[in-house]
Length: 459
Image 1 (cartoon, rainbow, N blue to C red):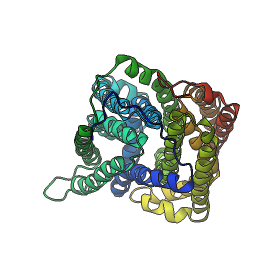
Image 2: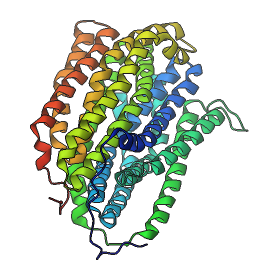
Image 3: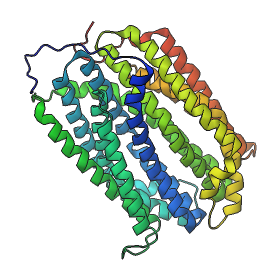
Image 4: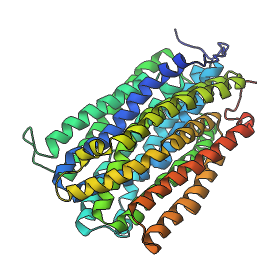
């Protein structure tokens, strides 16, 4: 039945319990893990080509992601708006934010093409070996041609997620992952009649897979919209999405660029093998972190729906439940990193410099076990605050902690004190511990209760 503009919206306060969290979370967990596996698969399938190819691919993937991080952060607010509107019972209004996300995706693709014009001078600044930089540049150029599609997938997945439908995004990302795995096999090593393209093949496979997945999810969005009355898009709503979304995007932007600076300018100073070792650790963490991020995103949906329904007193319960779940997962991950680091790093340590990459990677992975619990707390609280529309404070907190503490501290440790990769990795632990403390303080102040995300909130 088509919902009409005259129907009276009915509030939909969510059930806040472990089952409702899990029902929302498991598709997001699979979705995020699928995304991470794309990057991990690129690294694993390029690893036999040697440390230089591995460093170029992994660092290129991180740099490509960094370019998309600002619009990506804005698309997360699509879920915030949609979940609050769903809580109000306004599915017609919620759908408009799906379209706003697609508009943002189109703007992103134009931005990506513009970046290509100035990319080479920027890459010259990065202290990498010439051949590593050249391969990385090729990887980034190819990946940016699918930047708009990547943001489109996120926008639509967040739209459906806000409605409590987390499976469409999961299916799109599984499609992306499977297509990319097959494409990597065909293009990196040269199978099915294709020439062996190495790093170039990894990038091309990921870009093609991204467009295919986006096309499928967009088709479902159009099909699903047949049952919902159409209303004209509103510039005021789009600008409101941008207003609350830009701080969230800058929030992610500041953090990812801090880590890119750390990887390129701090770890890069220690040599290609150290860079490859750090990229192995970050690739593993990107996979292990995604289930926790899925849980946190599911908790954020409950938070948004509760606020939209005017049931703000349910929010602390949702946050406590979500944080407990993420702590359980990342705590187990930390134990695994500490007990079996060699087994986890070994698949990456192949080709030229394998023994040294393994040694450095093991050391870094053991240290990374120390930041897992802090990461769980910070992620759960950041997602909850984002769902409430409280996006400015987290941005400021990351700015100060990342660029006043983490970046200068790690750079001084390596460049001026001559400390090695272990000390540099330890700064990540300090960063996440401080961030978790800052976000916990912010949530406990209750400032999020006074944020008005929607133009017409339910009281």
